[in-house]
Image (tube, rainbow, N blue to C red):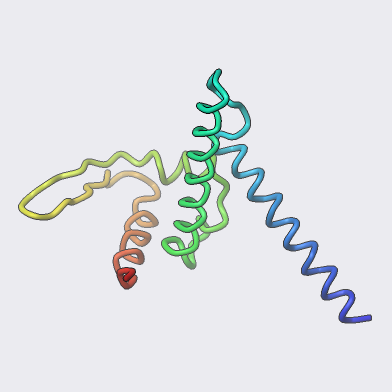
Amino acid sequence: MAIQQIVAELRHRRRARAEDRIRCAKDTGLRNLPLYNFDQNRIWCAIVALACEITAWMQLLALTGHPARRWEPKRLRFRLFTAAARLVHTGRQTIIRLSGDHAWTDAIIAGFTRLRALAEPG
């Protein structure tokens, strides 16, 4: 009986995770197809899928141990993605200068630090 309960719970968690991803995709731009042509909307769906994948990987790799790892796309947009910043090219470096008075600057900096600490693929 315990094995059946474990299997049922795993199936339920997989389904819940899939429904969460669908909800996030709708919040990212899949709710309405903004273009008129079928091929254009197909490209739009591919862009939305790519944005969902990048967001999921960012939450997994960069926001480890931070509450932002569980945030929905709308909250990520309003808190992290809208931070005022400036790209500065100096020498051979590209520097991101974040606004010092933004409430979530520390989370953004911690995420960049975690991503830079990862080994380069390949």
